[in-house]
Image (cartoon, rainbow, N blue to C red; front, side, top):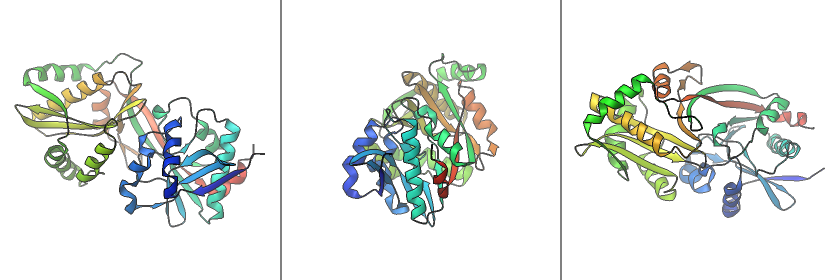
Length: 321
């Protein structure tokens, strides 16, 4: 039987980690250490590396909170990151080694925010089988609305009508770096007024990340007569163009600007496998935001799910196959 060694990530592993992430079949730029560590002061990092002899074969981005481990809570998703040639038995035993390492450190639970399957570069569903073997519990399931670009882009009748009306508004779309105005004039006021929350990323954080990942994080703003009306921040991966932030103001022209902006982005990124609108559920997935879901569906988006699962680390004993 192969012998696996698990150890915590160290700063000296920076290059090794990032090189592995670049070759992984189920990783995106969010797992690059530069992305993970922009908010390192908020989390107690417990990222793990798994070796077979001296060869790195798996990574796990994670943080520790009391006696529980989380797939990194500063990221939108997580998972055991592996290369495309891994076999199911090897994956299972790697996961077993990870759970045992946690258990040996008196860490009783491992909560995993699943990587939506649209981000897989190739088929990578080993975690579903391992979760079954280990008796893991699904504790949350979010509705994740996505356009599948293998099908023809087809907004519904209401959305087509809105886009037709917007043609006379002379809305100009720009890819620019005007994060300040989008954050201060549109996004933050809308989030505070509607939901009483701030954006997950501060203005300085998103600007820093956009500099670090200029090909992966891009801003598009919609202007009318030189006035900012709406904006979107896109996170771009190998397979997905994802609306990370999107917002427009409340009057009719501004709402139309957001429609035009979404239509522009969907058409621009038709070369990606998917265009992701993100979650449309609340209360840990138990409540559907019907209005938000309908608006996304009106562009042709359909439902995928993002599950959150919880492992008991002692369940490593169930992973002998």
